[in-house]
Each structure stands twice: as C-alpha cells, then as structure tokens.
Length: 503
Image 1 (tube, rainbow, N blue to C red):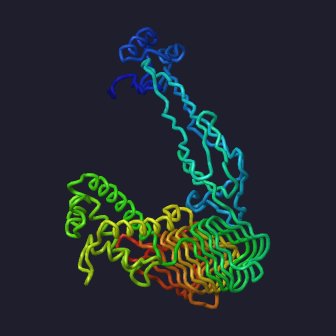
Image 2: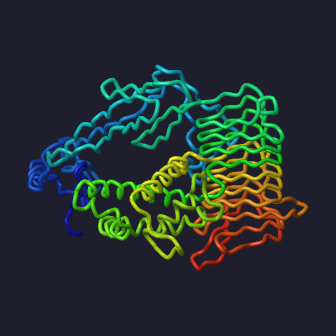
Image 3: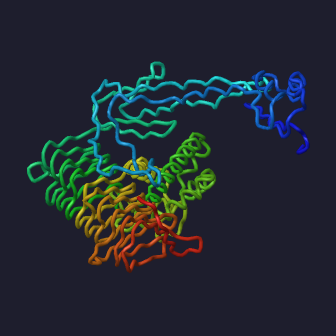
C-alpha cells in the first residue's frame, strides 16, 4: 500500500484521498478515479471538482466525497411554569465547578388549579446518508417519564402538569424522569416561641421568623426557617433550610436512630411480609387448609412452605433491625410484634410460641406502619442547608451545606456529602460521601476532626495544624498549614495527600 501513488481513506461520512506522488505529465484520468471510487462502493456525495483536482494536483490530501450527517433530535423536556425546589448543586456540579453556597430560595407553595409545567414530546432526528448511499440513523430520542404523586395530575394528551391541591411542591428530576408531589404546608408567620407553642405537622413547615430557646419543630416533610434557630430542636423527614443559622441547637433531617441501611431493610421486610400475607389469604381460601390452621404448628408449617425466597430477606432484615426494636422498642406493642416475627422466622425466643394468623397479621400491620412513617423518599429528600452553625448538632441522611459564615464547635453527621463554604473550627464533621471545606481549623490550632467514608475524599482549600482527617480507618493529623489539598485513601490502603488547583 505504501508504494501506491494514492491512499484512500474511506469512512461513511468522508472519503479522503492522500496523494503520495505527483501524477505524470498528462495527469490521471478523472473517469478512472471515479470508477475506482465506484468499485469501493462510494456512490453519493462525490465532489467532481475535488476529483479533478486530485487527478491533476500534486501531493496532498483531497476530500473527494462527503456524506450527509444525520440531524440529531431532541429528548423530551419539561418546561417549568412555576418555581421549583432547587436542584442539588452537590450532585450536579463537577469536581472543579464553582457552587454558590449562599443561594437560598423559599420552598415553592402552589395553588390548586395551577399549571405547574408543560411536557414537550421528543423531536425525532432526520437520518443522514453515507458515501455508500446508505441511511445513517440519528441517535434515538426519549420522552420524559412523569410520575405524578399526591396532589398532582398529568394530562398526557395536553402535556400539562396541574396542581390538584394547594400546598408545597416538591420535584425530583433526572434526565428522563420527573417525580412531583404536593404536600400539605403549614406556614408560621412569626417566631416559634411560647406564644405559638411547638409545631408538629405531617407535611412541610415554613417559618417566617426565628425558632427560639427550648422550642420544637417537627415535620414529616420539609422545613424552612427564614430566621435563626437558637437552642431549639428542628426535626424533619425531608430537607431543612435555615436562612440564618443555628446556635446551640439540634437539627435532624432523616432519623436520629435509623440509618439509610436500616430504612432499606425495613422496606424490604415490609414488602416481603405483605407478599406473604397475600399467599396466606390465598391458602386460607382452600377449606382443607383453612381447617388445619388453628393449630400453631400447622400455621408455621404453612408459612415455611409458602414464604419462598422472601424467607432469607425477612431473616436478614429482622437481624439488622433487632437493636432498634428491642433497645427501647417502639410504640404500639413494638417488642411484642417484633418477637412474634422473630419466633416465626428465626426461633429461639424463650417462652414464646410462633404466632398464629391473627398475631402475624397484627405484626405485619405494625411493620407497615413503621415503613410508612419512614418512607424511602426520606433517603433522597433529606438534607440540611444553613447559613452557619455554632455549638450545634446536625444529623442528616442527605447532603449538608453550611454557608460562608461557617461551622464552630459543632457536631455534623451526614450519610451524604458535606460542604462548608466558610471556616470549620473545632468540633467534628463526618460525611460518608465526602467533604469539601473552605478552611479547616484555625491558626491557633483548635482541634478539629473531619472524617469520611472509605471510598470518599476530603477537599480542603486551607487546613491548619491540629486538624485530623480520617478516611475510613486511616487518619492524618496536619502539623502545618497547607492549601489546596485532597485527602483520600490510596490503593495501598494508606492516606494519600494530593495537590488541587482550586476548589
């Protein structure tokens, strides 16, 4: 091939001819070159002028044919007509992408009948044509999947998403899926103090004022405080946003005793038990079987026979949840129901027989109520955003973001990621998913602890002496001031310290 005067580079969208040596005095025959292209299957997009130039010209590269590329289409999209819950910047930002940690927006409340959004269908692309005359298909396009939760109606024909009731709009959106729901919203127009009393609400709470000393705010969904929290407690199953800060307070987003793994185990147990109950009801419809189920040993034999693959899931979940349900227990006879399940599926409970049908049904109802009180959505929707925290305890399933006024002598614990846009001085921060800190410790060497999960890293713009950083079981104590560093676990299981250009 190297000895040929012309090398042909043939691709579906382009044919390049690379002339290695000049033609003879008369040049090459353009018709012969066209025949050569035809022999190689090139039928469309041929440029006669380029072929002529190739036939007469000197060494060089000539593009003698071009295909027509496909016109790419567009995936379906959602056009929002109202303000939505802000997208989590921690999840969407790149490693070196700047985040405005000071950006705060109030939770969007909507009125019944409001058109929240319009869903636009995908626009198909147009096929192109290769130099061989064959069609080149465009990339496939995909519609947006709309999951309309409570209080939301989606009309697939018009593409409109409409609020069916007034309340708080929550949105979870990914590239091809959007989930919406409208929950009840309690608005406190003023401080939470002795005059207002504590607030406990099954939906979301928005407070236009401070939460004052000794007060309690509990919400099943989200909480927004437009003021400050001072020596008070705020708990929610969803996001907590504090426009000001927290002093001497306790902020819990998610659950203080239950971990995300516990929540998943609870829902696996709930689903497995509900399937078992359906199988038992089907068996009870057979008179011969129903007549024998009054005897405990017969009922246990039936359960063993029909539980199937769920048996292992149930046993695994019960073993994981035992400390939560036996150390202090739960309301409504929690210990009794738990040990009924343990006796039936694991055994070894002293002085306790396996439950009969009624006791099992009661235990299943108890588990289902516990699962409803701790929905899986809690794992995705929880998190804390605060301007600053001082001498406070913050616990969250999701990400924790503290503003540029920083965190002082506080305990912060999250199963997600943590970002502190200001100084982190004193106290302890644990973030299973990693941490990004503007400044850790102080020039005076105040002891400060930062810990992350084994697979995560800590990124520090400035770190002072006497700051201890732990990744998994390995740790490093800084003895001097450093700037722009990342701490992670190396392949050898030891702490690795890397330089960063910036945060």
